[in-house]
Length: 428
Ligand SMILES: *Cc1c(COP(=O)(O)O)cnc(C)c1O
Image (cartoon, rainbow, N blue to C red; front, side, top):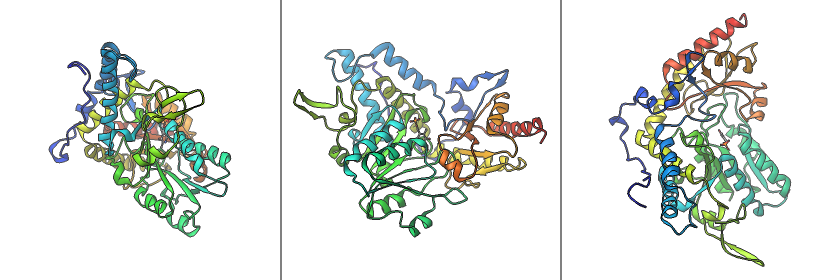
């Protein structure tokens, strides 16, 4: 790699006490946050859907395309070598960010959905009729449908953890009904719920799964952006997440896996780059991670995601988690002042991420989000790709406000005011 090639730096360890978390300083890194919507400042409270991007991520992608663009691992020329170094540099940065034992444990996919489909596909050959796959009722559709398809294909049975009224995984109920047992082959649950914000006891679940020999998978799409994560410490075998929710670009997701497990698994998609030798009579496959990365990978996106994790670690994930905790506590307090508002999930800011979903009596969530949008406040209204969870709470849909490192208390005040306006508009 030459001197001007993008060097993706894994941020230095930062002592939380040493840095003052300066949200205005952070906001200055996100040009889009200066936007106005209908003459009002944008209040972006939809980060659980996708996060905004700091200038350094956009610039890393731009620099790649403007100065180093070539295909990776195939081209015998300088640009090819630079692009390959930048792409693999992105992989290394991400491996460092999540505490992987080695970069080869990081597989690039298109998004978290593809990473979870990859898991369901490659684990399929291990299942037979009567085996059980365990998920939970609070999953995103991306961690439900691939397992339903796999169950249909193999004759395995799909079972799930329920949640308590407070929106916590019901471990007591699960134990009583013998949910995890010797037939359990796969457990796949969210680390942090994208609707309720609940942080699930994933170490405990991994231990339960491993005690019966199951493979344990985490959908960490909401956890990796918000919490300091050490994949080796979590105890799971496979962990999926998505670049665009952690200040990175769209078009890239990650599947982390223990190397010895990845090395045992069959390929996912077939094509270029994933092979060792191809003959017309059969092929052999490359070792991980390339075995699971058929065709030209998301090169510029990997460079951008490398810059994203460099940015997050320079600020410090402990500091980001603490800021989100503070904003979430403030939001829960504010929302409780809105007459009749019902929070789905934990109403106290303990073991809870920065997504708060709620219903307002008599007003449809689509109307709530439209009226908030008319005041420049971006929230999400609907089932947030978690229909079974909404059904569990007896509602069709909800409004969700979600926060990130750039969210301010002023924006929460604007949300609470906006909800008051919405209620007055509907004569409440
Ligand atoms: C967003 C999300 C996904 C899906 O991510 P994609 O990037 O859309 O594939 C899966 N699970 C959870 C918990 C999510 O929040």
